[in-house]
Length: 185
Image (cartoon, rainbow, N blue to C red; front, side, top):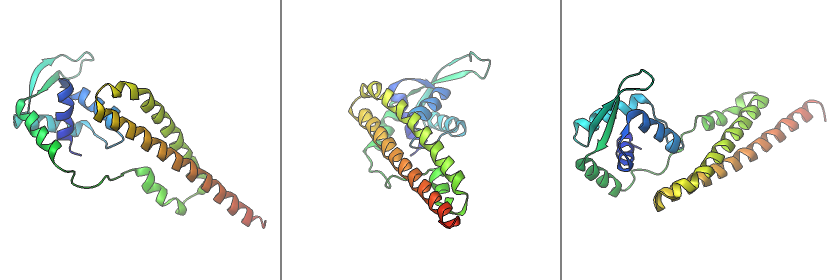
């Protein structure tokens, strides 16, 4: 997903500072992809240079950091965003998860440690599911599409948790089998 269009989409809701854009993307779209300030600010500059957004104002930082620049979407930005929305997606969904990559190679490591990592993932995803369910009502007020994406987030989270719990049980059983066969028994 292009950060450029995510920024344009967020600016449809409200004018925002770069920090708020990053915070919103991480909080609400973090399950889709990761973002850092090194992506936000160059994209804001490019969008402004292309006439798609403009800096609306500057306010001092409350914590003594750099001044905050408030951005707003321009009509050209709305038009560009509408063209992007109308295009078909380029490819199917790709799941990029460093845990799953590691999981695929757990067979070369220690089963006890693998189980610890799996159970840590379960705890993290249970916490995430709780946050998603708590936010569902708030998101449902944003319209049918946002509500449906929120529902998808909950459903994917629940499915992933179900798989993690299944994996945990299988690895635990595998450990017991190995220990039983090493003791002769």
